Length: 281
Image 1 (spheres, helix red, strand yellow):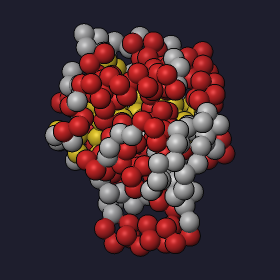
Image 2 (image 1 turned 120 degrees about the horizontal axis):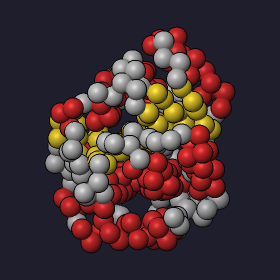
Image 3 (image 1 turned 30 degrees about the vertical axis):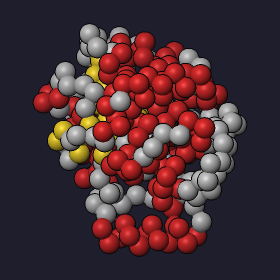
Image 4 (image 1 turned 90 degrees about the vertical axis):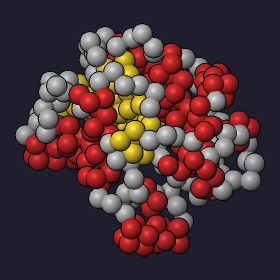
């Protein structure tokens, strides 16, 4: 039963994140919402309450491309909450051009991978205080086409938007596999998932006008609803069917075999080592 449990969701003000929050609020969870805009967080909180009658909602503004911002948010969460039962690393982004964050990291890998790595590790003590906790990392089937190029984390190696995105989604699965191995023997599970091709505005943010137009067209034709896109996140966060299941990859609420690279133990550990080096714990 997830009723009464505390759930933190990143990227919770729109799209899959907001749909996930509404679904879990409807099951009686206590929500912690995290996203960039405080105004949108307040609006989302009010929307969730109006939709589900759940009033036990707190929220924190955070820039997930900034390690400083993530550390500040994590400190507030730890100061104001006694335990955390579910962490859903949902937020992600795509960026048309090569750019570095204030931490000197390429924007896509920083937002999509390093945010998951840092936030999860910073909150791990709080998560372990739960009698049974779950970490849910939203990845994508794009990871099948991904390749890890560690130099590209800081340098422009011929940047291409889809290559950068696929790499970041592969990193999500590799991180989840290594995290699950490190959490073996604890009451914490970690799984990753593909939400489906969902009609969201991820392809309209921080992109050129023509890329945004193309994204709007293809999502209008073939994308599923945000509610369907949130279904697997909700399932992994709440279902008794996956109690104790860890280190797996899911699609449409079913276990699915991820790309063969994700089983590379050396690559898993090297990604963790590099992540810890570039994102000190």
